[in-house]
Length: 153
Image 1 (cartoon, rainbow, N blue to C red):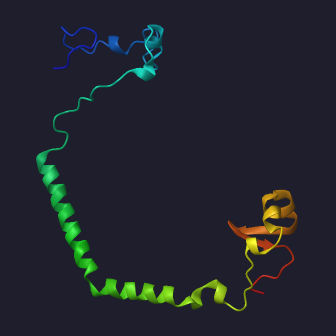
Image 2 (cartoon, rainbow, N blue to C red; image 1 turned 90 degrees about the vertical axis):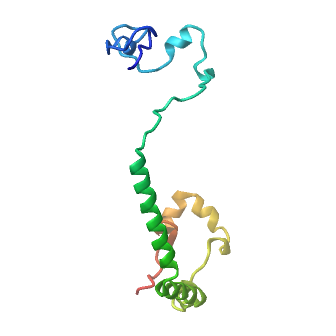
Image 3 (tube, one colour; image 1 turned 120 degrees about the vertical axis):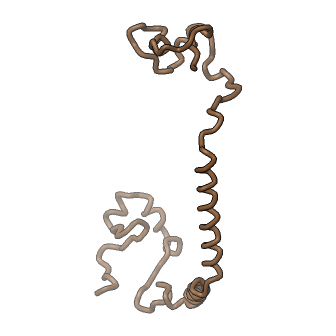
């Protein structure tokens, strides 16, 4: 049984008195704290000693079921790591990172110049009006000068 928060000797009968604003009896309390400030309390300085929770918010059977499912999933992940397929994928990743032929820098048909390599370009990029006159941003971070040929052409 829940006790009334306004009268500790009384059992709560859901009268609604505790939800009425102390400053305006026609409003519901929205926990703004202005009533406490009016009484001289600094609402930011109120210390909370503890938060009372229900003793058991998860049933023991449910908890055991979840733990068993987690254990099964962990074992399946462990067996996956020992699987030959994962080894093949790791080898593929290693080969891909070692072989730089996929990198755009190694493609002879594409000329790349970095912003820091061109004198004055970083200043132009920071001035959006000047930049819009001479270049278009194709994608975020990819700026193409106007009047230059596309690499597809």
